[in-house]
Image (cartoon, rainbow, N blue to C red):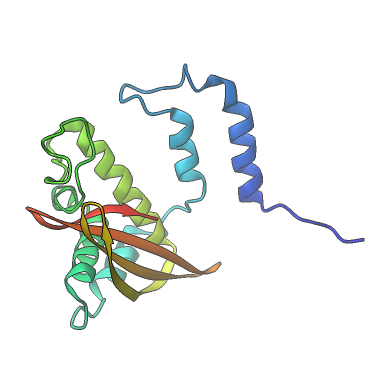
Length: 184
């Protein structure tokens, strides 16, 4: 007979979901986002070892062989680790209720609701970088989408304790240039 182990991280996520399952209606913040989803967003993240290490890691990246999409991702990484949230906001596509801005504009950090989205995005990026000893731009490809070409940048983060972590940054053209529409 063999034992099947459950990762402590998966167990913690299952417990959080189970404990909060009936409470999502009363656990919404002023933006209509469930607090439960905010908790789950951060459960698989490890705190950065230090802001300085992440900033050193990003600033040491050789940019000479990067294409335009990869350079935009690099600029986003740098703006997050240096806490230049206005620049980070300008690199992330607006996703809100103003129909005239959808697909045409980036976030504005001066708007508190939009600043929150930028902060969360940078927190996720900083967590990816914080426990990394290095990262590399692995692949780049263009794919058609219903809104025009989509550029996919694959980044491989080498983690100090868990090996590697692969993330994808999706960018699209806008009047403001290439901007991030999603990252996984």
